[in-house]
Image (cartoon, rainbow, N blue to C red; front, top):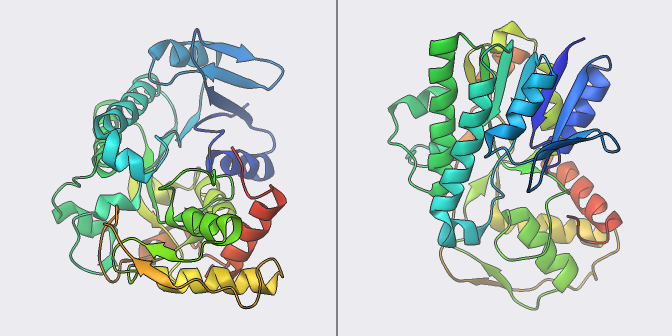
Length: 327
């Protein structure tokens, strides 16, 4: 029996990875991990291991009880504006501990799949972001960016020493309705949803210029692509952007969400809060940042089929079904 370990399996992307594995690989045994304090255990009722990946005893238990074939490492510190500002070292420490511990136990797996981030391109001056570009870029400077950069280096060095095959994915703005709505400084699309659909703000505050251009990808598509490529030898020892090439500015995103809300008859037709620019954008302040998907298509043949409008229609629909929040 093929066994796959999915770290971060209960997260915003991880739950969809598990769903995609169940569909594409129904005979595989999927090992899930729920973050928890205390001594690590296997909970037979939920079918999950419970423990802390920052501690080696959890991985010792998993790899002692299972001959793991594949690892999909999706565990990561939750993204937030306050994380950038208030906990930079904790983010770096925790992310690095998790990936290094997991790699230490994954020496004999067939493949290690690592979910990195578009933050690898933090220092890029060009609008079109190709995987090769990062080879000549200065290292990122934000805590999240540095953590993902070091994670990528750790995966590559482990491959050199232990011969582990790997795929490093750099997802661009994956849209998941499982991301909690409460609290300031979530991913931009979650903040926008909260302000427009939950709080119904009278003035719409935008950090930075509002002209930052980004590409968004529906979470089920992202998960399906990652899972479909696990056994694909063309993706061995490769770094691949994971994105949809349909750029949209933050101002346009606000208008798109308003349009969807009106179309679904959950926002009044006259509701259109004026934009107020204030504060500093936590991410990369640039007019256009578009990922190249040429390598993705060449190696996997995969291309996103869900438009940005349909992506956010699904997001809004799921959020409203959840009562506007989750988590």
